[in-house]
Length: 335
Image (cartoon, rainbow, N blue to C red; front, side):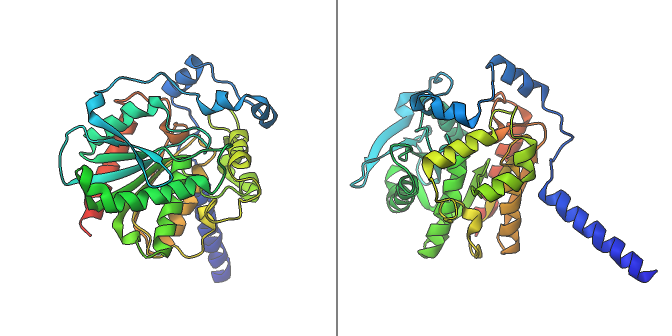
């Protein structure tokens, strides 16, 4: 009888672990407002073959119209011999402010588009910080490791020169969405190898692609559940990978999940969405960080799609996201 009970306990533990890894974080009910958003933009799934046939400019520059904001609140600079473009948002024109280094999304294909500027300006206001937005080189013109090299070079430069723009280089946050979240993970790992990760107080990763290997993409529960129908698709992920880093997905600087030793990395905020193919990447990377002794704040938003796209600016989910990041910043800055 005791043996049977032990087997039941073991089976239950394994089931809980599976649920944790493959969690949907909701009841598989798409937020009605997001469903309406997808209808408004006339969203349609494209196959991998269709994506390959599209003019790359049509993918590269896709996005909504840019919203206005005071142009006096941004500086446009280029740094180092590589002339890496950076936008510096300091709406308060204050001094000694936390520094957020932002890496944009776009599948490693889109540059820093004008439609992203006003949200970054708002972010600088909301977090009472200076936001440095890195316009790293993108594929197919510049494949891996161009984006990584630009992102890491920019991080090191800002660590040395951030005070010249009113920033506090002792309070640096790396933040990224989608492809940018991948770059945050990679840059943090590179900084650790070089012994300079102590300058990074927090990583914020939203919609993290942590493992871009075909093996993972074909076995991940969330990739299969959300392959089509929810804006970010499995085909789009494959297209991004083959455009950005063909044949190199086993490299930890492409798939940061593959790095064995994550001990000593900065604390992390990881944001996932129920209807995102990449949801399980975030869950698994958060779990691996925790097991390595890294402090992690993790939240999965039920009913939402990749990177919480489609939510209105005042949506409660975005307010929860912002509150979580503010709390994590406060805790991380104490150390």
